[in-house]
Image (cartoon, rainbow, N blue to C red):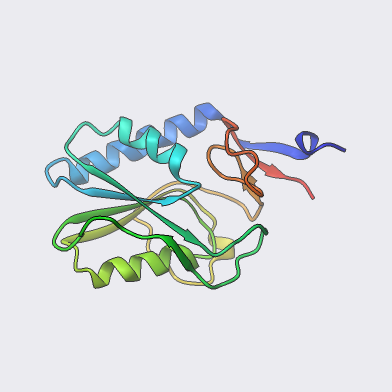
Length: 175
């Protein structure tokens, strides 16, 4: 059986587009006069973040960090490694962390703690997907697109061993 026959659509492109528009409205309401820094966690967030920032019509900056706790597997190692850190200061700036999916919470909690130590004016989290059934570390999410089931998701930037990022829908892989 080939890998495409194991894919099952969870969220179609139109559903994702509607959620991104809703999130953009919420973010605009809260940040339009604040010139925030949006910090995306690479690699999975790049598609969502690109779609989100194109709908934000106010001054902002975009920054990326690359953190890893997965390696090439499907399970987190529980240890976060900074692969690429921040290249700009966030002290006294309004910061919005943008994530594709909050799963165990380990990676995003690591970044939030790091950023909090840098003394931003405000710090919030926006995620396209929340998977609370797998949470191992408590995380406060300020903007959520979808709550999703405990499935291994791919597409719309999410991968499995660097495959499937280019799919327009979010699908799950059947074992």
